Image 1: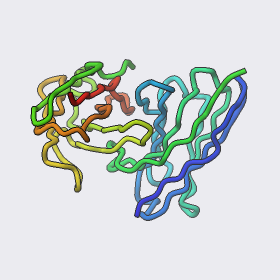
Image 2: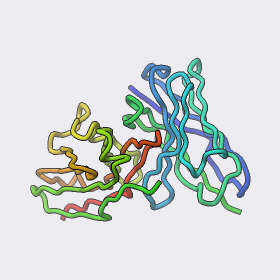
Image 3: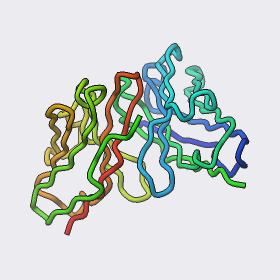
Image 4: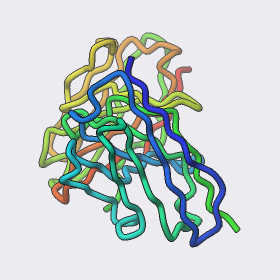
Length: 118
Length: 110
């Protein structure tokens, strides 16, 4: 059974940093693109970032480029999102998602809530 | 980039069919067949329902179907059931090597 389990969310002040982790199991992690998708409270889904199987290609939404850094450790079956210079508008549930053929999010974690507030 | 355009809400009675539209541009929906649809129940993670415009993942009911014409993709749910009540999102790959979601459509089963 495919499982994606996010951790690391919490409350942080504007300008602060947080690192999200996603532990993957039940599939060959190193064979898939992986992505982060977020959802602000009561709002829709927003794609945040995607990374190729070997980490050689990474893409970000404009609003986080330069502030967020996505990485992966295929040996540990883990995905990460380092979030720096956090803003109030980054408040959201962050989902780790497997990206089938890069373009489709076919498996999702349960989400991790990030709240940015003073 | 702006989100793909979806109607905020649609409704239908049990047994009826409904269609949700998703309008983009030639740089996303119209330019690629990488359109997908997701169902999100309250408090749950999204679930992939349609990919490659028309394809259903294993386990998804054949009551769900997808199509595309020009810059607009559509999700049709036939034989509407109470359990279909949820939020639905479309998504597309874009020419900027990013991915866009629609704003979401709330489906109410009357």
